[in-house]
Length: 297
Length: 315
Image 1 (cartoon, rainbow over the protein chains, first blue to last red):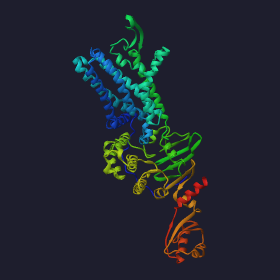
Image 2 (cartoon, each protein chain N blue to C red):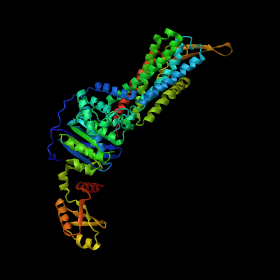
Image 3 (cartoon, each protein chain N blue to C red):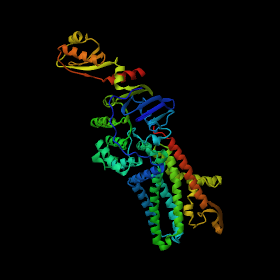
Image 4 (spheres, helix red, strand yellow):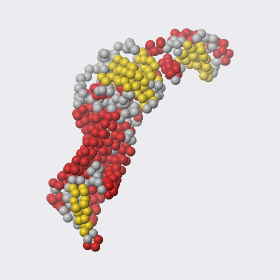
């Protein structure tokens, strides 16, 4: 073993002794910096652009066609426009703010900057998740404001209903679950493209297809599919038998004056919330475990 | 243990069947600069990544200031400044914001941050870029910010993985100067490098690894004297063209000379066995031959000779 060099070092400049921050404090700080990074980045402008385009299309279509069913009351209006639009906004927001959140740390090598710090991996994961969640929530809130503005135009003060607030909360829970799943995919891959692509395909088409197959072929309630749960966001407005939460026997006019009846099974509100929260918890734990074991090789 | 320390105990890393690092036992202690040398793929970065918990050992453990990195990365890295693999910085941040983030996560007070951030930016010559977004910076500029990030909290222990990577010659010289200044301040610096001149210039001790195994770890002085049997090569320049007869009759017979290679009509590469004393004797003899000797310098440093001989032996 070598001996120290001959040159005696001089004393280092005396700096105050620092205590280590608690992990939750580091989470808050990291969230703040990550959020600032998101809000000042092009991706946030892109997300607002997507919200603007979706909101703009919905506004223009309703204004042009003036569908009577849709404009009958605010419940029908929101069940259709908000119920279908917000899930798309949430999926885009998840992809944009979560797709590369963990994978990008490996692919873009920014992880080497963070991981040299005295900080737990879980702190990085949670801080990035919260920042992504807040950024995505901002986009969802902007979309909600756009639709509320539309609603106010058509229904006046009747546009601001408690059911809409409840539906907004359900959308937030859905966003929590979706972002959890996106972060899991992001932890599974070291390439952002794969994580982003899988999230987009799975949530835009994959889950819906799986749900249709399970219901159509296996005649089983697809309680384990997240898109089965997200129907409660629009269903809570109780505007049609086919979309209302729970199991119903729905009748509709059939050929030759007959009545066609079928049993429709949608997730009930507690069931939908339970599925979403289960998705969030399971994907968050799995994603964290994966990130804890991932090597910056 | 007193003073800053880095220790690896039986540190081993396998990637499938490939052993990147094989039972590395290394103990560095006190304020000094230790050069970590080895060819590409020798295991230098692998060792440094395990020392910073970026990858996990197959077996063994490492400690910074006596704290296990594997068991308590947060406490172990609290006193360390780390630069591994030329990291990228979030492109939307400015150098000041990036260093604010690092300082904030390290729990530096606003007053400390106010003092230290401009100071380290000045140290790496990035003051005028302090408020420009990092996204448009060159590789060398980013590397300067990375060095600043490793220094911002005035660490006791510095682990630097080829810090001069991506820098132009002036930048490399500045990094050497920074490291030289740092080691005067009771810091332990563990620096991997390909550049032997860099290690010779700034390091007090050197650890050489190849194929994941530690070949030696000692002070530069001890290493040089321990391997003094190594051959030394010097390039000699003459004021006039030499004739073949002069080379054969007057130069080749000189004591200790093993090989004489003409580089061109006026320059010879001379290989001899010996220490600095032998080199001085050879210079005196050459000067005494009245062949208009105008230059005489080592073509490879002593460390380079030792490095090459040890690596070749290992291969």
